[in-house]
Length: 479
Image: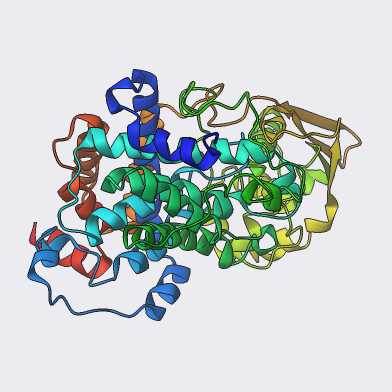
């Protein structure tokens, strides 16, 4: 009997040797992990996270072994491990500031880093990986996540699924299985279990449920590994024979394409991930950069503009489901708001997506003056959304029309976020999420994390990042 796709994936997860990762893969993985941890810290203070936090039960620390896995002072709280994953995962995505892979139009790092952090900081006390093991598990998790999505094709996204949720569960399961040394057979079963836990709909973009998708994916991955560890078994052919690929592609395929090879190269190496400069839907980033360029070049203010036309590649409007936003979360998925806020403020940052910013009367009045259209050939690849040109044309009241086109995707390998920009983003995120922490301490934590792959034990460094606000304030004031 031939080996199943699931078995091949499990073998890849368990047997791949960490020292075979290329230097570029490790470098890009470290950058992605740091980026994700930073936006998680910033997201922890959001009201949506406080709401979720209030719903979670808190368990007393009665197991001294568990309590010493990480010093009590650097624990989030007495969360159960899967609840910690739910909380961290939601926080990592609530600002929509985490990285993207346009190969499958998903956020690859958030569910995987969240599940790994919860496993280390709140799970089995014996799991104390070094940096190389942590980076390898991350690389394997993201590779499985994105290649499974690539095997399904863009049809999955077109059907209305949120791939970060559906695929994040699979990728996070792969990462935790590797991190915990689960073994080939139970890893295959964990993947099969995770496949039946997958879900998430694009209709929830712009609501509290979109970031919750990441938390659910991370938490479900932990449960899948736990169940497989306990002996729960699943279908051997879950990725074929009318299984996961068939169901989530709307019947378009149930066969793994021969050209998609795990780790040859790792997607982290080529084409790489896109890291965000702006805390909103990635489709808006070219719109923002084009509008800001027009504002600079022509010294424009809002009263100069009669109307605007935004031209996107085919499929570009699908995630932009809030043309007339009424909340900050809505605004993260609104092309009209992105254009007007860019003109009014001359910048887009975290404060751009406060409810009060979106509800400014001068902005609300002008939303209907912005028209958004798709043009160009129909696409079957998510990468076409990343590579396709975006043009913003502003019709001015003096009769002139000015236009600007952005082709290179901001934050992509073609227009990358630099190490200096990533460090600044880290510091800015810590200022929001850790107001009691000095900038010098934040920079020092970043510097330590930059050497993640060489770290002998990641436990305390991660614990110091994943702690909660009450513990933070106590520890940081004391320091």
